[in-house]
Image (tube, rainbow, N blue to C red; front, side):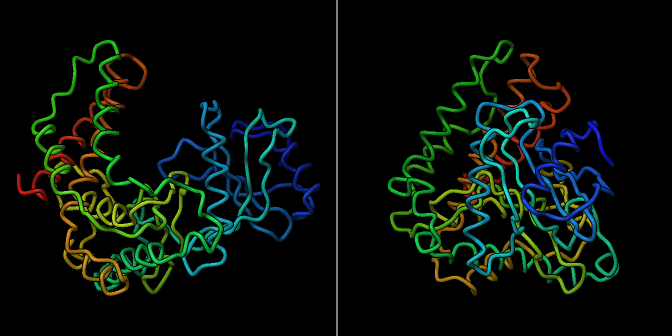
Length: 348
């Protein structure tokens, strides 16, 4: 398969680049797009006897798309020295390569597994105990990430841990206020948002230890092994930073499936039943971590506050005609769910 395709990459150029890197031989075959809730271009392909995954930013690059891919690649390479399950990068192009429109890209080894947000293959489909084990494994993998010595693996400069928690509420309040600049958005109609922010400021944990944060940890961003219930890989590392790893646990919990009419992460595995309760997830994390989880309600509330504000941004843009209206409406509905769960965690 050669020539320019509608897949977001010139396959002839990609073949030539693979030649330069000494990766496989012969034409590209079995080229197909991979989904997963991202606007990045991802392709599964085969060259000779080797299966590969190609990843780059969106077809229409945004100002920070390349920086995000460079960040992700740096993290993936660093994680090779750890037990954290992740995709293995093979080679990358971090400068402008002719024919790729200025996009940073890389190829990686395929992950043997499935995305539990979109499918429930055998034997998971008929085994609730296996689904339960898989849910616990998601919490356990997160504990492993939080245990990584980020300095030792070369990620000491990835973020600014000093004042990390102190920055959270002011940062996201400012983000929410910025949406009023969108035409048609008359300001947030989000019940209890100010009270929640005040509570978060008043109850912020005084002590914590810095570590790696995935930044978008939920069931749609893991892949499970075909059997056994283990996590095969944590994916989509573009938002990874150094801060308080319990933020990831809070995000997992506030997005965890509860069987409500509106779910933030409506994962197929969760809908199939048998998944752990939020309390079991916390217990599993605590059993594999030295971190103190007694303030977990604060992290759940903080995660709901942050993610709700992020999703509200899509709603504001949709009112200004900068995003599809139906997507904006669904994101606004999810924001209301997140903020309600956040208030519940805070006892408000």
